[in-house]
Length: 582
Ligand code: NOJ
Image 1 (cartoon, helix red, strand yellow):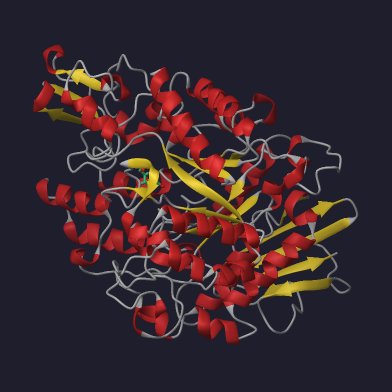
Image 2: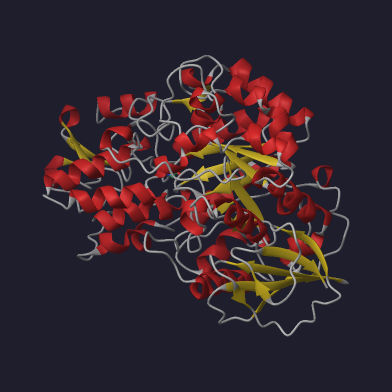
């Protein structure tokens, strides 16, 4: 079970990016003809998305929690990155059982984060800078403190009863359902008030909404329109592939929980709900939408995102982000996964490219090398990878600096609810606590949620109060202020890499060809569009590594490199990365 919980951080947070109605007003390049679905130019395909975890980005009022005014104060920094879209984790009213993924009012702003006026000012400030805003919509479940749920649980006769999934006690014990966050992993919670159980795939404070109910669906679409009318540019749909359920609640075979995604994802009518959402919301606005979960196969992923189906726009698959393990990972496996996904989407559909988000530990700690000697160079190597692949790159706040895992040692330092619940669970079942602590030190999502490191002052310039989650002590030397001054910093490398991608459509749309496939240390590929051809070379190891591409590099032009002296031969230095024009 422990493995499973840790796996959640991988699964949960894989998304399918739904994009629709991206009309030509927003897409200056739309006029260009396309050969395939995936070369059909759209602004959201060409965008670089920067994800902000609002709680941890910048606190303006000293309460130790990041807020909207804090983000506003950093808009020029965000602009300076060259990114096009911001994805904000949920900012709606919430009792914060799961840091905003438990919404108690979808039309209001969480008190910790500010007011609706602050939100309007943020949106205006972003738009003035030509940056779009994607909001996170939590629609598989609400908070148990949402008015709908309060009414629903008050009486079996409530008109809100069917907004959620209830199982009356007189029918017996409900068929087992696995909860990802519950301390007992039981997704049914008995409620004495009406002598019935309610379903919660996540925590007890996150009851699942009943999408079979057309009234609920209408309410949800109205909420989405409320935000679209305010002018937001996109939606990320949280855990949406779980929304559709077989409400006869069949018994699952024993052991189903080891592979619960297969049973939970892509339930009956999911495609109908998405088509309806598209028709009711996306098609009426010029928005990009982002949902979570690409199903269980390429077929599922295509059925969600192929343009002619009018559901979603972009698949965000877990398989890549899932590769990193505490014991390391195999580069041939990494290459195989990314190459397989690329080839499945080469003609149709579109992918998101990411290796980190708010549900993961830090990028450089998981996929690079966060030791003093290699942190900087390996973070730059990963930026080169993420920003030179086909698909829309997603970059999580702080990764542009090479921020690392916090690696807390004491359970008291962790704040993540599922982690704390699993700790309790392990204690209850007499589990191996030492092993658990070692695993969360590497994998817990709090690792990726520590305050943004703005400068070397106390609390990294994030807050003048006490931060809600401890600041990583390496902010003393790893921070924005210091990296701004250094032309070779990770931050400035990230900016250059974003610029290079934006100036070269071949890096967005170009054909991808893997070279030297079985090389255990080096990832090499070309990207090619019209008359432009680029070679990307990435040494994933902390040693010199040789590659065999058969390409004569003597006349090639290096466009970017994470070393100050250019590549001299087919031997790459530790974590060396380069994009070369052929
Ligand atoms: C997925 C989100 O990314 C994660 O942070 C959250 O805990 C769960 N969904 C539940 O909403």
